[in-house]
Structures are given as C-alpha cells and as structure tokens.
Figure 1 (cartoon, one colour):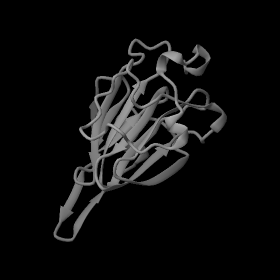
Figure 2 (tube, rainbow, N blue to C red):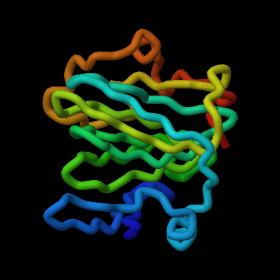
Figure 3 (cartoon, one colour):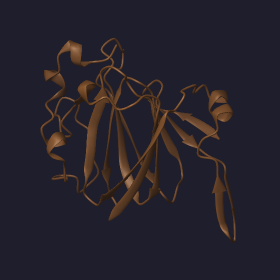
Length: 184
C-alpha cells in the first residue's frame, strides 16, 4: 500500500496494491499492520455503506465530540470527496482538500479526526463505504452548508443544485459555528 500525503496535514490518499489477472482482481482494503507502517493507528469500530444516485451530495458532516477518523472508498461509480479542517487550533483551519474516488481506480482517502467530510456523486449511482474509529453520536454532529462562500469549494461541473437531505440543506455557514461547535 502506498500513502500519498495531501495539502492538508493528516489527510492522505492510500493506493492499495492491486493483484489482477484474467479473472479480475484482489486487493487489501484494510490491514492493521500495513496501516501502522503508514503511520495510521486508528482502531476502526464500524463499517458504513451508502448507495446514492447521481447528483446526491452528502455532507459536510463532523462530530465535535466523539470525533471520527474515516477511511473512505468507492465500490461502484464515482464521487468527488471533500475534507475540511475544522480544528479550531489548526494552522489549516477552514482549508479543504478534494479528490475524485472511483471504482476504476481503487484508491482510498484517510481523513483524521477534526475534519468535516462530504461527497458528491458524479456517476449515475455510487456505492460508498467508510470505516470510522468512533461511533455515531447525533447529539455531537455538526455540519456546514455545501456551498459556503467562506470555504469556497470548487465542486465539479454539474454540482450547482445537488440533491440534499433536509438535514444537510439546513446546515449553516462555517463562520456561524460557535467555538464550542468546533473540535480542538
């Protein structure tokens, strides 16, 4: 497995070794020892799987307490995946990174605690999986509206009126979050 660090400290792309032949392919999507060798030491406690139709945007979510590190990947389709540093004491506070993840290129994105996360489905449909290292705590969940002008994410063409959940559509702006709504 290869680790590619991004412009956001701690956020990295992971490229697994793919063993392919005429039958198809095999890859390890997670191996605790291999991840430790890449300086990722989270103990993942839950796997999640979502299926979304094209044009759906999920996010931008984070938990202020019980913050979660995430290991995300796409099984089918293609998504534009975004991480935003929301750690109030970070030198990169408010900065974002995005990468396209797809079934055709089986790389993953590792997002440590203290980052908001979301994705936009580019293909007609996408199946998305992610591991988390702490459990979902709805009382600690916070969010940022997807098109916040202060963060100014450059979404892919076509992402002008995405399909949102009621909860995601109600998220406010990053600048309106209280200090107590941000992880350290």
